Image 1 (cartoon, helix red, strand yellow):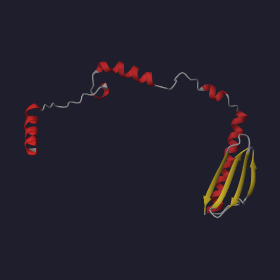
Image 2: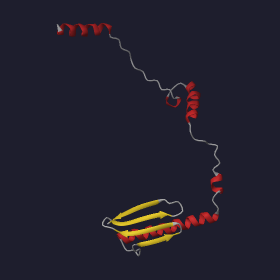
Image 3: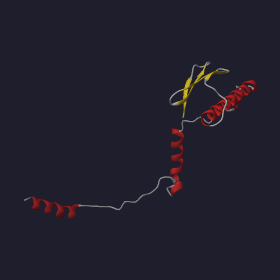
Image 4: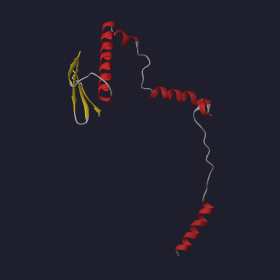
Length: 136
């Protein structure tokens, strides 16, 4: 009985089954789609755009005067030199010893641990703190 139902299903499927050819038609005119879709795609993209193009980026530079710029540049250079010396101390020749260092608003505590060189960095103006471990 099961074989009869199986054979009947196969025969009925051949008579009643329909198929069609799948055809891909692109929507975007840049990839061969209809050119009338361009305005619809552009308006849809603009509606989803979350960025504001009307911002005045010149005002960002106005807030930074030359004295602040110079002090930030000096802080970056001092921290860069310190990090270079710390790296040389751990992996090559250097003169930085474990201890506490204060550079402007940056407080550094350098200690030697079993894992390597531990550097705690505290920004006293904001309270932000970071910890860096340079392995042996």
